[in-house]
Length: 365
Image (cartoon, rainbow, N blue to C red; front, top):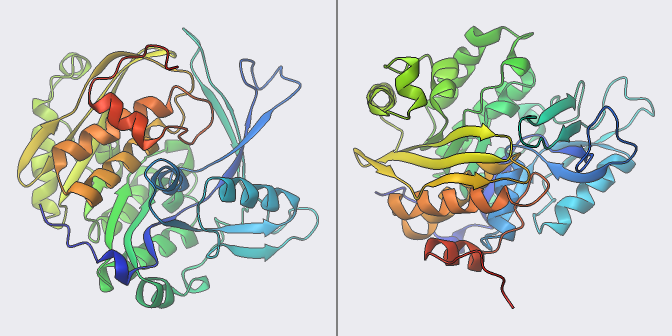
């Protein structure tokens, strides 16, 4: 598999993520509607990948986003800096004192436990990131002058507004113009698309973006909702993870988009909010690969698990150009990320590689 990565010494960044970063308010073991205190984290589907690649895997990463210039924006910046991610490309927008025209996004999320599933309530209207326009960013400077080996973005950001969709399309086109590898997480969220054209609009936007993607990430629902490809097989077969129908769908996807070099998806079987089956599969070089499997993964906080899978996958592809190894890095990193609170990973490369080599969960002293 040849992704044609640009040489490290020609690029300021190994990876850049384009997307919105919100302040997550976490009630811990309690619930949003009854709590009297929150712990704060930063998080965002695209940003979480950059953060994982920097903090766990040691790559040079940055983010393209926008913040309203107020104390919440400064708090988000401080959290990002603690994760080691570069902040020089963030656009700061003057705050009007109320939030009529611009604000920073908030994401209230409770973790769930046992039979009670996780719950999220986002508050992100008129955010600075959703209003970021394609011409607000100097793409030639980023991809040409600075140099970037890998761009990651996704369907969550593309869904936020007409301008965010246009910004993603411009970004992936410019990335390809300068030889930067592009990955994209379809991450379909019906709630984000319902007031801007629904599934039809999602398909229109994502089909255009897909033309410029090298590594596509998404589950069967994502491919159906975002690109219009149906999985063959009845519900019972899919519940049992009989993947023949999924494999056939991916073959149709690769025929429609011959530019895809890798297609990857996580497979999650929700037994309870705190016990999930967890594995992944990917397609590369005309073959399918199965990952390490956790049939009963115990979960503390599932939010961000898929993003940590993506960062592990990207690290493996960038470092080894080996689909099987990359898939396992992704699954193990995602599994470890879901054992700690917050959207982002607290795992280390040493921990990921120990689990890849069969390390147990015994106490380490």
